[in-house]
Image (cartoon, rainbow, N blue to C red; front, side, top):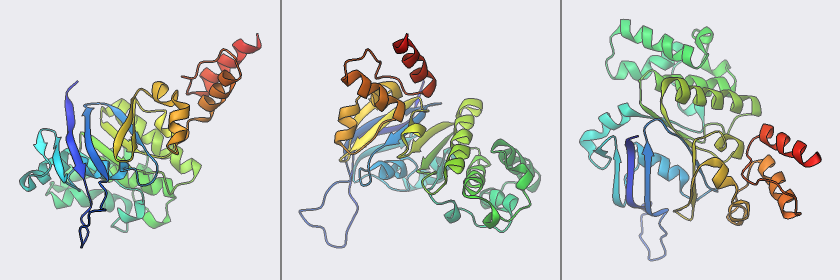
Amino acid sequence: MENIIEIKDVTFRYQSEEETSTSVNVLEHINLNIKKGEFVAVLGHNGSGKSTLAKLCNAILTPTSGVVKSYGYDTADEDKLFDIRRKIGMVFQNPDNQLVATVVEEDVAFGLENIGVPTDKMRVRVDEALKAVDMYEYRGHAPHKLSGGQKQRVAIAGIIAMKPECIVLDEPTAMLDPRGREEVINTVRMLNRDFGITIVLITHYMEEAAQADRIIVIDGGQVLLDGKPEDVFSKVTLLKSVGLDVPQVTELMFILHEQGLDTDTHIISEDMAAEALLKLLK
């Protein structure tokens, strides 16, 4: 698969009014590639640099040094911003900050109006986007009357209507209750599975990350781990040493393994854990 986002020796530092010798790089000499069609979860504790990494992908931020290329475009090239952001959509933590209209379907149409999509085509794309996130029946509702999960799905529909090839989601479930989180993650998985949209999900929920194809762990501005969920989460001691957790079933398998039982610490799903426990009991 081709690389659609290439991060090459990237360092990033937020500019302050007075640069001092004690200023710290948020990211330092990062090298990463995101492939077309991947579902990538990015983990890290607060201040690790994971949200900064997300914003570098579609040129909300540009590197202090190094190069970020999105779909072959250098994100530092201001003339290519429109091209990059048509390819890569961004969904933020608080859906209220992305909803701008008083009616759901008008909100989804907002971005299309800005890029001059004809009305007839706009109607089709808005309807398709709302159906994709299972919010079509709410098209005439007021966004402020929706639940948190519904609001976030409307925000995602607004991005889908723009027909991006990649969506970066910066902790989209952080402000939601468990039901809302499940609604959003199911939507994200469906977009990746059924539409082939590349997903980059910034999250601090281990169970969400476990559903990805690949997990990248950021710590201290650098890549600590990068691999399949079962391989990353098997590093229980390392993850806990940097303030991160693992799925509950993985921790259970780890504890049993530490007690001398023959358990696989690569287990990340409840079904796999149940099967392993049944074998132990037999």
